[in-house]
Length: 116
Ligand code: AMP
Ligand code: ZN
Picture: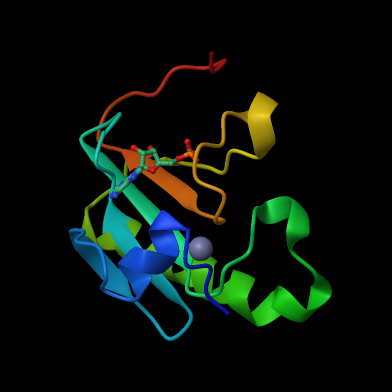
């Protein structure tokens, strides 16, 4: 299911341009337009799901695909040695600005904690 007013659905349908970083059957990965680290990739399910909060048990396979694409990309970009961070913002207080589930994959520098 796609949502015609959703930026990520449009990118997945190739109706909006993006720099693709990878893909598997259920997910795509694009380079973030406004990178916060040397490597900043968004891993996005092809299905329009609003956020991780809406994920259900029927999405178990999709979650496995998301994680396996994250692992593959992290390895490809040599982040597995020093480590990396994954983040998924949920709703207003979480700082979510695109209402289509996505996981930020951030790495290539020392990341700080706690987040802002
Ligand atoms: P969030 O604020 O957690 O919902 O993350 C949305 C992310 O999408 C932000 O880091 C934006 O920089 C990024 N973004 C928004 N539009 C695009 C786009 N057209 N292509 C790539 N990244 C985008
Ligand atoms: Zn969408």
